[in-house]
Image 1 (cartoon, rainbow, N blue to C red):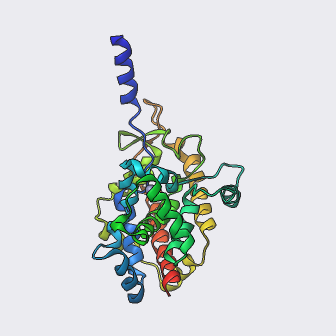
Image 2: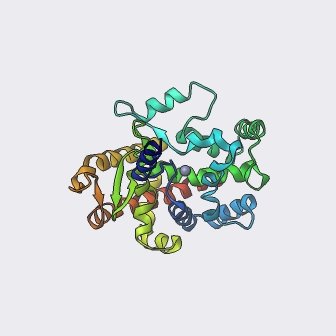
Amino acid sequence: MKLLVQLIIGILLLFPSVELSAWGQNGHRIVAEICNQYLSEDVKAELREIMGPDYLAELANWPDYIKSEKGWKFADSWHYTTVHDDQTVQDVRDKYSQNDKIDDATEAIELMINILSGDEEASVWLKDMMNDHDAKPLRGSTKATALAFLVHLVGDIHQPMHVGKNKDRGGNNINVLFFSERTNIHSVWDTKIIEHEKLSYTEFAIFINKCTAEEARSMQRSTLNQWAQESITLREDIYRTIYDYVDRETGLPSLSWQYQHDYIVHVKERLLKAGVRLAGVLEDIYL
Ligand SMILES: [Zn+2]
């Protein structure tokens, strides 16, 4: 019996706890901060009506915080989508549109856009869900709840491991070393690469946000399907290259300076695009 317990503890130590999260806290704040830099004063005023004295960057992580509230469990699947190798993003959306639920990030993003645009039916749907599940809305408001989810989920869908293949839970089951620390590839993409830069979210946003107005407009001329498709293209690159970094001793991919160098540029690009596009969506809703 003692041996069994030791064995179980050993296995648990070998495979660190796995959890589907999202861009880490700073990732979502960076997206919100970049978005803020592209919003017109009129739209900022509209948002202040909804979120009061809070900053967009403060709202950005609320959908992750409420994952630990029982009532909000129904929203867990909104943080990602699953597109298998033989599917397109549209295949997945067609499948999900056949039921009344909100199944994934693409449907949840659409729902939030509809609510913020004043669609009464969408608003009632979310209100009923919250009532039925005893899930508390942010600031007691359906619109504030929708805004926080929109800010968060536009970030999530730009995180390549949040458009997963399902078989390994978005890379949560792929163990790697990151600068010698045992973790998994999902977590590397959620937080580790960003944290390694040791920047605050505002510094990060300043360093990333160097595109011209024309480049920003071109990023905004894109569809939700394209955002997810870009994540899939990057996801495939991540899967293809991960075993180029294997450590002979442990047999695990050992990601450190070279990986950080190779991929930080992609992380920055995804955060920038998410922020710029989020601003485009909000401008479209309010202007
Ligand atoms: Zn999330």
